[in-house]
Image 1 (cartoon, protein in one colour):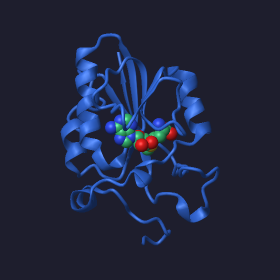
Image 2: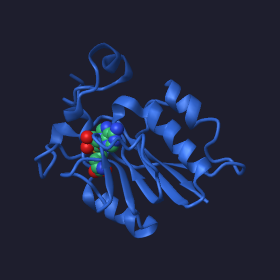
Image 3: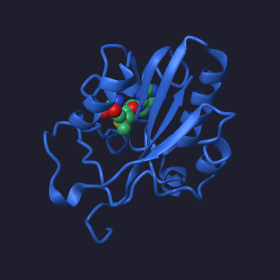
Length: 169
Ligand SMILES: C[S@@+](CC[C@H](N)C(=O)[O-])C[C@H]1O[C@@H](n2cnc3c(N)ncnc32)[C@H](O)[C@@H]1O
């Protein structure tokens, strides 16, 4: 347990030992935060979702597997933290292969830049004129929503900030 009562879960080491826990991966993006982004990006597809937390009418679930489906239009992605490497690889592949993909906005933890997924897929490309990827570090800490919950109690906020990765042409 951390000092603020948030138990670290689905970190790469834990997933390697016991597999991903979908209950842990299933954290909804706060609606008001998402609404502001949606006003700007007009998302058409949520590529990592479940029926109870999908942010757009069109979405991919674990069953359909957003990692195997085409990404089109303006994509929202708050991926399961248990497999960030695969989501970033997929985002880059789709971005390179689909000219009809207008935008990808991906919400990620901002406290792990030393990890291979950040070092491989983000750090070499971010905020450089020759690539289409920018990173925005967010203020404060987001209040993610557990399945079935409508609010987040004081000790349930993750003890880390987040960032947005934005691919745009
Ligand atoms: C962090 S939650 C984001 C929920 C919601 N899209 C949002 O932004 O509020 C990640 C969701 O992705 C789902 N998921 C897990 N693996 C997936 C996969 N391979 N393809 C699509 N969705 C997946 C989980 O069940 C979970 O509901």
